[in-house]
Amino acid sequence: MSQPVAFVTGASTGIGFEAAKKLSRNGFTVYAGARRVDKMEPLKADGVNVLQLDVTDEQSMQSAVRTVLGSHGRIDVLVNNAGYGSFGALEEVELSEGRRQFDVNVFGLARMTQLVLPAMRAAGQGRIINVSSIGGKFYEPLGTWYHASKFAVEGLSDALRLELKPHGVKVAIIEPASTLTEWGSISAEGLLASSGNGPYRDQAKEMAAVLASTGRPATSTHPGIIADAVVHAATAARPKTRYPVGRGAPAIMMLRRILPDRMFDAAVTAVLKRVGR
Image 1 (tube, rainbow, N blue to C red):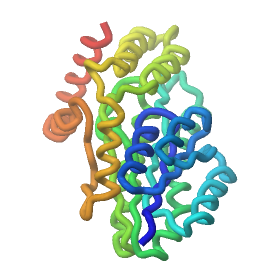
Image 2: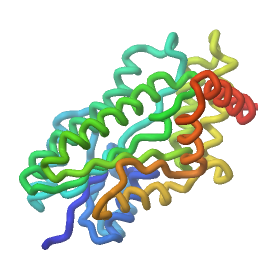
Image 3: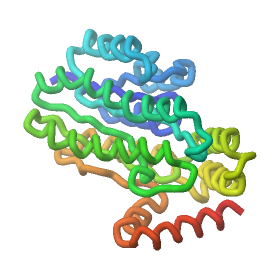
Image 4: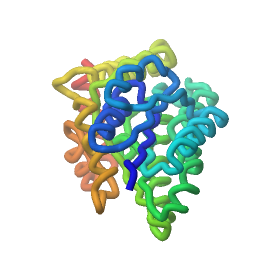
């Protein structure tokens, strides 16, 4: 049997970059896609094939999938990692930005999945690995669009898991906690731009500080640790349905399950005020 083929989206930095590298080192033929192709150049040293990919552009997605299928006739693993965090008060964020958040985090993921499924079904096997977030299970103020998109990824993935089981295709969800990437600082900048000077400015400054703190080793997890979970989901005979991973992820998920909503609200508010000082 030839080497299994994996396709990783959003692979220019962070989790996607590390996942592409680690999958290649674990025996996969790997294709890595992102808009910023130059950022993926170092992956070539690990034998990773890099492709231009914009998950909001139909032609770009079709072209990338055709390239992989044309070369190998198969895609065994799709890692839907492309995404970003849009933060700001719902009242102040333009609906066009809310739509863009869903276009990238949800509809791009769904369309990439649609494009690879015919080949997986024909083979009677495959893996869809969706990178969600612990933010798909809990919430923060001024993160309405981001959390809504990740809650949607969770529901989509759970339904898809049952839908694809008869066809031999497995679905797993990766739920990272704060990760050492540029994600937090970019999200903080967007938050302050949209809500840093209006009626939500006090909350915005607190939340921006929390988002920025995700770039510190003391509070976050190296993306390579998250990538290890991706590799396990791609290679395990019976992968877990979801992988909460990273500093504090299991504890946060447990608290969300056991605490009533208002108690969890109070806990979130207290943490934000402490970190955001």
